[in-house]
Length: 314
Image (cartoon, rainbow, N blue to C red; front, top):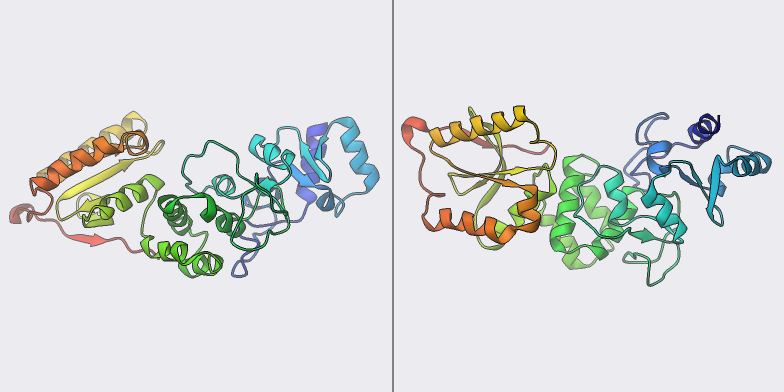
């Protein structure tokens, strides 16, 4: 009974969008997955509740256990997302690096919940400029991004921006607009953004370009389709994610494609998520062995040549 009652409360609340604070974006239609349930994750402010119910009804929901008070002006339903509950209980809202993850954006692993508040303070994440009001229990993407660039290193910033672009949640011009108040160094990092379907692809691309290698992302090769990264002319790097490449069917398909690539004259190195995150020196050493032998830059055999094109972002 209480679960049904609280679900009806959240469905009556105003609809928002992950990009609600972005002047380029319109709110999603009522009932969309990026609407109220997805953004608030079971935590909502008293001010928002009062737009749809009376004080008497709010008190009754608290008294019956359908809602519980986290701090003054904020309430949580049973089953609310624990990270959101933690952030609001700490005096702010879920923001910075933690908020984009709930919106489906690829973010670097973090060992803490990032909390953003409407007031400045040592324990809260900050942006370049004044603090902003707390509009929801989970910050929209533009607000989260402006704070995340203060907490992330250069690689992490490009990882998040690449993911936002890949998911078409923000465009390049919108990224520039949202980061207009950041430092010149942060704004310059946008020039490093490129095609990537995962954060690990971005990490590998940045690390190899940093040591002077020519790396082309998202290359389409006839009979192989798209490959994650191409180093030089012949070295294919496939970056296996945590979920997409799991399962026996995917495993067999990956190995069949690797064999076909070798038949065409390519060198293939397949790298796992764990290796990129926790064992990068070994991965780099293996790649550099191929580079030192010049196996990455030789011409493909003419009788095995394959047409290549770079996958363009739309």
